[in-house]
Amino acid sequence: MDKIRLLLTVITIVIVVIPLVGMLLAYQNNLLGLFVPPEITEIADDLMGGDVDNGPGLEPPTMVGEPQYDEASHTFAVTFEYKNSFPIDIIVKSLTGNIECEEHRFPLGNASLSEPVSIDAGETGTMTVLGTWTDEAVNHFATAHADEENVDVVLLDFAVDISGIKLQLDQSQMEQTMQVPNPAYEG
Amino acid sequence: MKRVKGMLAKINWFGLAGGVLTILVIAVSMVYPWWQLKVGDDLMKINASPVNTNFGFLDASFTIPFIWALNVIGLLTLLLSGVAMIIYSIMPAKSFAKPLLDFGYKKPLYTFLFFVIGLVVVTVILQAVLSINLPLMGTTTSTVPIPFASGITLSLLLSAGFQWSFWLAAVAAGLCIAARLYHRKVATVPHV
Image (cartoon, rainbow over all chains, first blue to last red; front, side):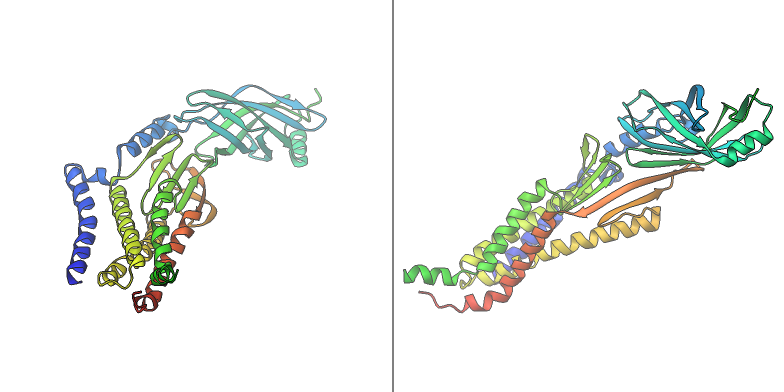
């Protein structure tokens, strides 16, 4: 009985020690490799390989064309292009931002993505962002910019949800300036 | 008929069920993890169990060598425990049965507890060192610091949970403990 107990104890020690010692010997020249496999390094390199100025693998969307404005509903549409610099296909589920008058820093409203957009790895996708001027914004246009046909505004505080990963860019990271038609301009 | 009844009465059914279930747990755990964490919409996955732990990033799957070694230990420990429990359970009154029981009955429980403690420790370390709030169960949004990129906040949707194989392992561990408690009854059954 004691022999059986001894044998079982030896077996227990062997099955614990051999895998650990074997792995230590296999990685004796690269102990970090025991905990960080090459796949992690490759993925990190891929993700960090984006535009260096804008952080790891992240590039801000760029506006294309002129904003469209619907006078009746006070809504506007802005089209952006976003380059997927990640090595994977993504779905931009949402994109929101605040709009301010560039000259007076007056909050005019907010904008959000019209519908989710799928963008393949390395490709550039087009996203339409819709927004509505608040009543205060229309008043501001009427009082502060009455004689201007187009008004400079900034789109800031971008928040993007990419495949469940949410990215918030504060004012210092991204501020998109654009000209929008003045809804209060009567020419 | 009496002889068959006598043979069946000698078997420690808790131990037999526990041993078989322990081996079944090994097989199941190769495919179904005990605990799974998903980052974003399946962008990244962590499948963890004491016998097979792997990390998935989209289509790529990889393992960490140190964890692989621990998994080999877990696999062999559970395998030997299961085999010992089965042999013991069929012949619980034999002289070699008690050492086999002592060897086998605690290991599924220890493996189960080490796994849970390991998960808790990892989540606590991640919270303390990287300020990443990793849920053990349920869904949460965790803010991750991005080095060298001030002004950017990255929030990850994290959903985690224990899978059915985890509960199967809990049942196996429970049966093995029950086998130890039931041992006195079957060990004293006279041979027919």
